[in-house]
Length: 236
Length: 232
View 1 (cartoon, one colour):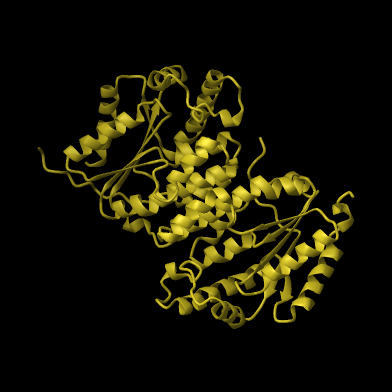
View 2 (tube, rainbow over the protein chains, first blue to last red):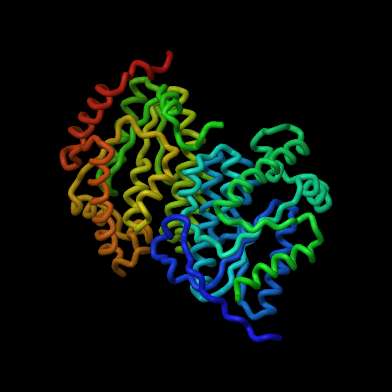
């Protein structure tokens, strides 16, 4: 095994004001994000990339949505009951994000880890925006987030997404079909329309946030190779 | 779709109801005053609804857990309270305002402004968080000298709660001392807010009866109460 390559530290920055007590200068490690819809292959790619990073001697920490100690259990209950209004839901997710940000991501980055995020603020913002949130409100809310070193966006056609989702559970998830938005009472129609709306928000964000789009309609191995090659550049 | 942030039109639509908030330090007497205001309005036969800070059923469990295990940072403390507020706002405050109620709020968004500022959250960030909420028609601020408020709390409750005393901020390892410093910061932030948001300042050192009289007179002067009378 080749010796672990030390990454050239890149200056970190925050989208807005960092949380109290945090300074961008303290963040040493890397933050890599994989974004994409359910069924875009995100989880497999996160796993493959983690394995590759560790193989190359980079200590890696995984984070994702709804994994905070603070509110993940309560969020699951709220999701199941569909009882929260949209601002409340946004803020609940933001709380979940902030908890992981301050208790996992920032400490790990201070210690020089690679933080690999399976979804990040972009999914949260896109969900809020298609539900009519004010863009300024959402951007300010997530101003506490550090800008990642790399953001991969797995692009998969809605047609393929629906097939992959059905292969997994033979059912389309209530939230991935955005039944709360009441686009259509038909779950298939709703899923297709919602995924297009989300994809449109991602396209809008792509330039602003510098996403690296990856064609996710290919085999997992081919996608993983594309991702690795790009990540490898980070450590040169 | 309607934006989270209230457009001026949305603000207008809300105006079939009326919102009265009370703010002040712990121990300023505001809860007593809003209770008496509520009783008066109820007995007189008006449509009235009362809501208090930090009371959303769904969010409460998470807040309690976070506080108990001391898991909260200033940011998550701020966000979880805003989540709690949003739940009450979307579920009750806003629909009731639109339906033509007098809504009385024991603490409103200004409580978050002053507490989160004392915890060193960015003030602009906090104001933006709460920008979906309508401004109250009247905000009563019960002003008492810092020592009076702190003295009332310390005399009545021998054991201060961890966050209540601001122990998470590391001002002092003595809860009473920490509480005093924390309340001092909140007190100064309140005075700044009172100017910025044009609070109706009530002297919290005069008798309960005198304060209540001023509160009721202000309400009568500024709100067309006849609009809120219940049909017999």
